[in-house]
Length: 213
Image (cartoon, helix red, strand yellow):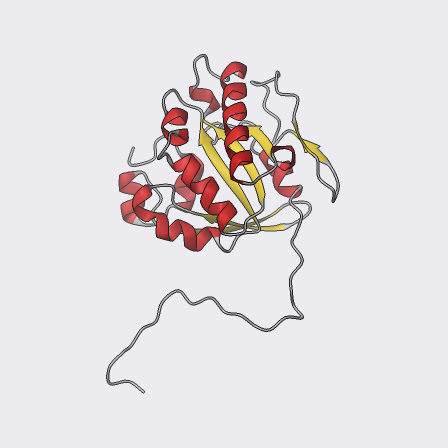
């Protein structure tokens, strides 16, 4: 009844009282799970403009960005508009060095009509054009129509979008294809870790506590 009535998966990751009451993500949250191929750590970064600094903290640690685009009437248009959050987050991810991208076209259950192929194709066309402009190659990006609320194409192939023949990515490291978001996560290429290089530690904050030490 409170907060994210239509955001079941987001509710799991939003632990702050203010997040659940306002129905938005404020702080970054870590959530770990295991697929057949990887140990995955989800860094749930806020999409709300007021908390962009928190989003940068989360995104800068990622190997791959999952850009969630809302397919609802008016929601996609707001996100992809000149000052929209979809544009800002995709640009920040690329600028922060996250070169792998997955696009989840969410809320397919709330399109007109529900699970509309035309709406999905409209969104993928526009998002592809934008991410290409900022530096991503759309051929290497998996686009997946999903419903986080009903679970469509999240873990298993949905029977409500039989028109979707699956995503396909082409890259020099090897091509991949599938139908679900989980399969797209399994198609991520783990970046090589420069373990032979000098140690670097990111600092987020410095505290000076008087009278101690």
